[in-house]
View 1: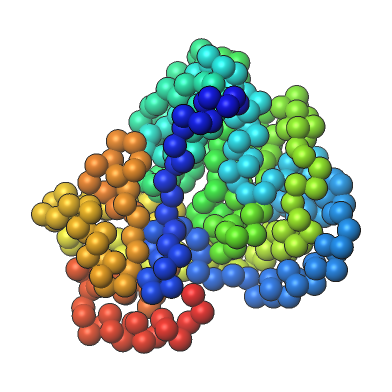
View 2 (view 1 turned 45 degrees about the vertical axis):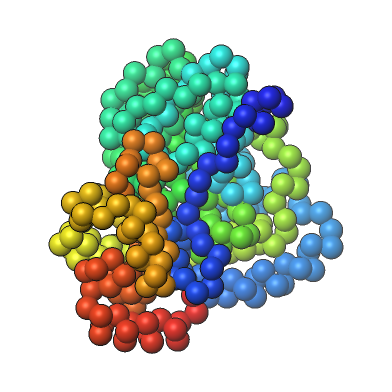
Length: 355
């Protein structure tokens, strides 16, 4: 990373609204948090009077059990994006290229450019069929953001084998995999897995996540990690959340059920991409309105949706999160596929919920 490169790059756009008058469907975080997590966070204040344990063994053990890997291969990070940055920084040198899916999370290309590299874009649907040869790094997001596509583990492992043969590092971003009830590829040779705990557990402000890598790459990530890079409350709440198997199961069931209900309703008016994630991608081109108008109309109805035209290759799309049933009713009405009376009742129900 150098000064000129950093100065020339714009910030990548993201969802999330801080307007208290809007119900936020533009960010893909769980509206629920595990019971008891606030108490854990508050109790960790006493531990914040001293430096956290180094390395943070309890957090690493919880993360290892959560994704099914060796604790020694877990590298704690303040959020999934920090894990992504660390992996890109170790793999990409100035002049290198990196295989990057599109449309997908905009930070991948930005991080590659910050290291002096150049992203080589490939359609997200075809990324596992791409040739990783002559690239320093390949990136896969599963489920992919914003399309919601989750890749088969066996196919991912075959791609990882091809990357190893080509001498290409593979970064797999599993930020939303916890919603999909699919196995992680954490611990696979030559692969860095990035995990975020903020999406599934509804705690984006705590900034907790980790990377998983083995062998030389894992040793390098561990060595490069700053000491005490997670606060005591972040470590405590992260470890606690990863142990909440019932919360994870109930969240997955709710998301799957509500996502299908929303997909069927939205498909009456929009083209909806299949999804294994806690969000849906809608092509609004057949509706006769522009994305800007759809976003503005929803906002007038008290709902924030994500303008997805900021993702490479998308020019007529919005992305919407999957929240709780009453809240989802409000979204459907705001997008013109729900009953107005039902939406008013849903609003009253939602106002009684802690969002």
